[in-house]
Image (cartoon, protein in one colour):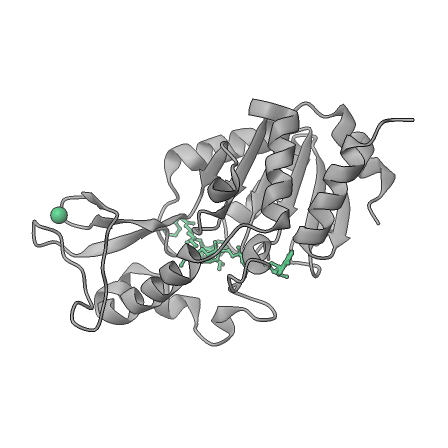
Length: 246
Ligand code: BJW
Ligand code: ZN
């Protein structure tokens, strides 16, 4: 059940911004990091998602990313992603998505205004000459990819202790500051600076809505917390929003 004030605020809004996390892709079959079914219940993030781990255990880290890349390549957006495409049709350029996901599914669904805060698993780059590579092949024989220059190639994702891409972060802060309505969808609110964006929106006067299957570390700051799957809740919001006002 969507509270009436959510639809009312959305009808009044000119600018709508969204922060997404792993939960929005869960219904596409991409495992989340934390919580029920989270991959990091078994694998600790500190052990894999940082540069030192990559240098120490390059083949293991590449095997992990290669496995996820293959899974993601064969994955389709779900009803939650497509509902965000509908919202972009309604608000046009004033609708933005800042995503922590590296799975490309918002773009695959058709959203245009997407800021990737933690990179994209389909891209890789050389740590010596910075050249981008998009056709990395990992198999039993070639477990570690190298550039023509001899440098080690890494996935173009943001690991712990690394800065987020400046342009994407600046645009995401701007979107949070300017939003009339701000959504946080399928993120546990553990990882900063992304987890700080909803409070930027709240401080700047946005009406803030969280959508998650459970309460999170940051739930208390939202005006409305909607507990449930994003693939159920988002299409319902779009449906109500499109209904004729009586
Ligand atoms: C559903 C659902 C459904 C399920 N529908 N919902 C102390 C305080 C503050 C900050 C720090 C600190 N100590 C260190 C830091 C900084 C650090 C940080 O935040 N650490 C915290 C863990 C404490 N941050 C960084 O290091 C960042 N960089 C930075 O700060 O730079 C400045 C700096 C420079 C030098 C030194 C120090 C700082 C970088 C963070 C990079 C994060 N990278 C990862 C890996 C990316 C690549 C990859 O994918 O492999 O990004 S970690 C991982 O977590 C990934 C995710 O994007 C990110 C967030 O996870 P997310 O999306 O929230 O997923 P989950 O699994 O946690 O949650 C899923 C949610 O969905 C759950 O709540 C479910 O309930 C829900 N759900 N199904 C709706 N159907
Ligand atoms: Zn190179």
